Image 1 (cartoon, rainbow, N blue to C red):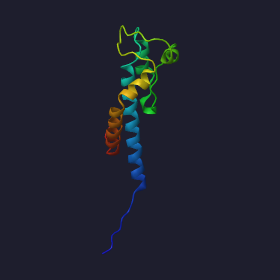
Image 2 (spheres, rainbow, N blue to C red):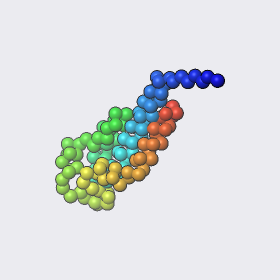
Image 3 (cartoon, rainbow, N blue to C red):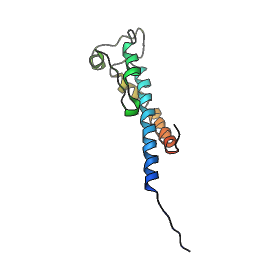
Image 4 (cartoon, rainbow, N blue to C red):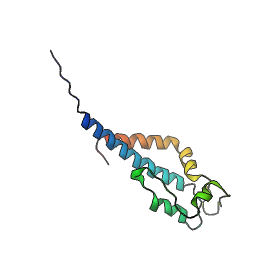
Amino acid sequence: MAVKITTNLGAIKTKIVSGEKAMTIAVTEAVIQYGNDYVRVDQEDLKNSSLIKSRPADGLAIWDTAYARRVYYTGTPSKDVNPLASLMWAQKGVDTNKDNLDKIAQNAFEKGLKGGK
């Protein structure tokens, strides 16, 4: 009894690319959300800039104001509006939610493999 197995490498690659794309978007959106939990809030310009300037499809979480880079690393965040405000807010969000990000990545990749969005 002979068994013939054929492998469609093109279809496999397409599924992997789809999974990777879904994972990149989901993880980037989560990084923005978790980072914004720890972002400095004055008039919400910094927080809002991440929602406007970030490019989840490219895997880029961006906080883009004239002062974003400086206040990311230096100073003392005011906790008046956001009691969780922290320096390096994006990293703090990732570090605090590492297990959740791993689950988000896994779930999104699996969903993307199946062709879901």
